[in-house]
Image (cartoon, rainbow, N blue to C red; front, side, top):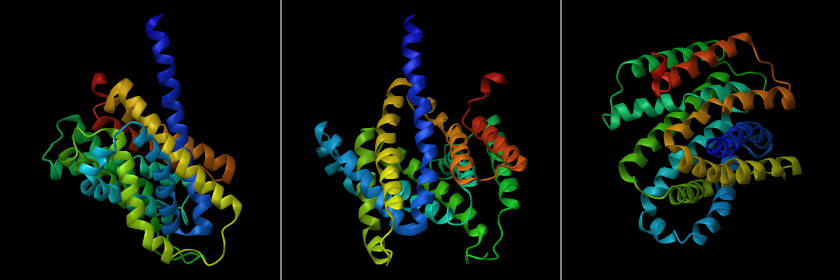
Length: 298
């Protein structure tokens, strides 16, 4: 009885976090069409910073941020500023479903960067998982990576590379955090990273601000991605880490593309091909192996 009462709220929060992060691709798609890639990312991190800062102050964790602000701000560029801008650019020419499947490779890039930078070498089935995951990425990108501009002047190949570049940034920021910010409170890192990303993108955002005022729909989309998909999502993520640990929380990676693809089909009329499902399954299987989640089956 006691176990079931504790597992139920954990499961609800886990699924809710996957649903929220999955919707970030949809909201970004609505916003970037009118704001452009850099302003979309700049507004997203600025809104998120404004949401998280009061919570940080209320918990009395401002001194910790002030002590480590340089490293945290720098990490924020690689953990939020640059990847959010890259995903926004990608969503101008590829579907939310495809971009979310590519996003599922974040643990693969994280393991690769940790191997090269921190000498945290994977062994056995984890290496096999990395190979399988990247084979799935190659298969998925092969038919989409055209570098010939379409009618809009954009090429899907650059969009695919932008998504993979964002995943690489996430991997770099994870190793940077482990090496230089280990032991710091999660809320301090999250809030500081959003502030750092907002400051880093402030001038480019103003410089590239759209000449025509975006619609209310675009504004609401960015408000949603900033408040819900970044601010609220971080709070949920911290709660999950406290309840099930970092490794268990990372498995939300597998839920995100499921919801993102569903939203894309329902709200944008995007098509889901059998090839996408096959490649996505290969990517997720490789990711699970690289994270050691399937070791019990061996």
